[in-house]
Length: 192
Image (cartoon, rainbow, N blue to C red; front, side, top):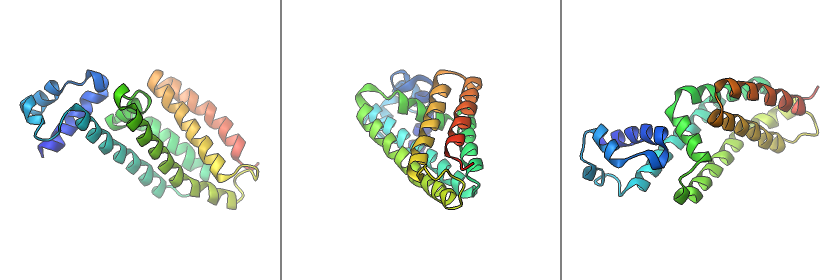
């Protein structure tokens, strides 16, 4: 129970202050234990950070899996709903704020591990999305010159663009970017 509570509190601290701004003393105080007691559960800040990061990454992937299970074709609605759902998720979920912040701004000494983990995450997301594109191509919804693989990769680029705007801008700007990039993306892959 305490390990779960430590990770829950640490998530809030890492989300607000990043790796550098999160203090083990503050985390332990909020949990209600002494700082030294944290070491009964985690060898240090890096291990705690990775435990939180892995938990969050798993929940983010669960969001992707659950969304895609619940949304059959048409492709346009599935994809736009996914983008808009992620945008809304960022507004309300510490998980998403933390995951994106760490994906784009990892702690310098942990950069390699975080980048590898995030690349694996994107690859897994692409694997889940590609069958939707393949089905749409078979149904004649997609332009015949656009492969399912290319459409999937381009879609993740649209998603990345929205993520960047959410991190650097605000929700209004991210909605504007989403609207513009979606319009161009969809016109490029659909079969008119």
